[in-house]
Length: 349
Image (cartoon, rainbow, N blue to C red; front, side, top):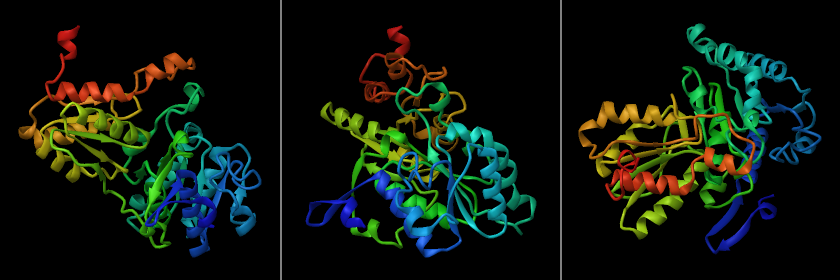
């Protein structure tokens, strides 16, 4: 299987798309545990709306790869009930915008049951699918739900960036005894990343709640998740040419949030820029800022910079859509402001 979906890059490295990383993780976990099953719209006969479940129906049959009607409330409720009885459902939403149809089951049925049963009942279920902005799909298909779900006790919320993230975090999510919201990104599915032999091992797993320092630096900390990690790394390359050393943190886990790694980085760089596609108010960046102010305020040498999506529903027009989501140049400008290498916005105004 791996010979088909990967190409050799060098003697010791291979490449894998995020799509194939997710597919292989699902395949291996379904093979290892007969309690794992996949359910959602077009996951079977159509091989998945984004081909994440390609080949799984043929391999595991219709009892473990279940096509559903267009009724998120219905099949999510069935999934939670199955988890109550010890099965391990993976529920696919064609987009997380449609999880709003099922949010009662996610929050009230899945997230709260372990606490309300005094720990007697676990709910081992994964809710996964593309989250946030794609391209030209309008306001009802572009919403980022990271901060929504991350505000709810009882849920774990993961947001992979690379193929390593996608493969390791999905395996961890399926093996976890608690409900996990797994936020993918449609525009990352076709992206290719290098993967090591360790990542390709069937036992590979990325720990939930641990961020990854993608690039070390000493002048400013940049936190990001999902697609924005790539933007942050591109910004760091541009900043390096101008003498600014940026440390880029891939959050990976939104809840629990790796506050230790973030604060340790800020205590080293003394500056912070947070990046996310979602809305600015009550966002993931706002929570990170609060954590740094509470735990590392004395180390800050500049105001914290937050880069987020525009505070409007996503426009459909391509030119307005680009203005509504963060761009690499926005991150570069914010980092320069934090390092006092540009005119502050207030002064420019």
